[in-house]
Image 1: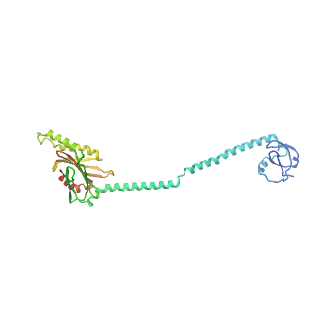
Image 2: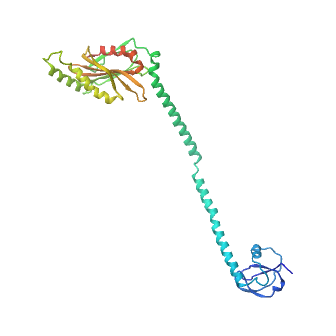
Image 3: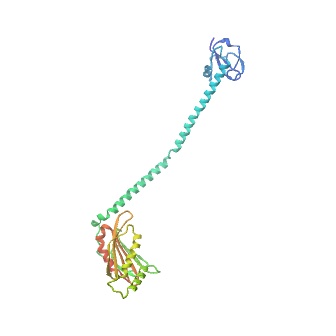
Length: 318
């Protein structure tokens, strides 16, 4: 008779016996070490969750319950349990890494928003480059698109201490002339490529008056008019106001309705890198000194130069 199964009444460990001769003997359980009498189970071939373990613990009839064998099996069992515990940590660590990986994923709305923002930035850069290129090329194409003004309008503000003529159709802005604020005016072309601005300066007038007093009685051929010194002094201010300011050639001294007048041609750059060219003019009377700026894209300067000369020659004190 083979295949007999006995169960420890203390720990319910099942053991399969190879011989029925073992029945009735008193032995110590190999699992809990409690003594019990070997009795066959009612269902001899019933399967058990621990059947595999029981089969692994089988030994011959003579040494099935040998104490040395029992200790060896227990030591082996402890080692297996320890390795299984260490192995059990791996799935959790993988799970943790997986969870971290899933947390690191960018949410879909944020991804879409970032892509849209990137598109807007790229479009803005393209527009900026295109605008800058257009600004740089303005001078090259200006001659075929712009003509010098023919008609002029009179600028005679009710409040202020100067008047002049300016191109008809241009935008005119003005102010000052009272409350200690010096008169000023600005004329802007329809395409905003050309600007003429005039502003009074009492400090320059005071310096000019002092210069006139100091030169009275001197030989006119040996001294320069005070307006020349004021013009040189104003160069420092305009060098600070305009980027890459550079004057071309020497200044020119001539007469206008204001009296002695001094002018210089200069170049500067726009914020997009385009080059501009124009006049810087200093006019000096007994009461007020005026600074006049005529500025346009470099390619327009020769076209607009007669217009600038017209405004300069018509400016007068009120």
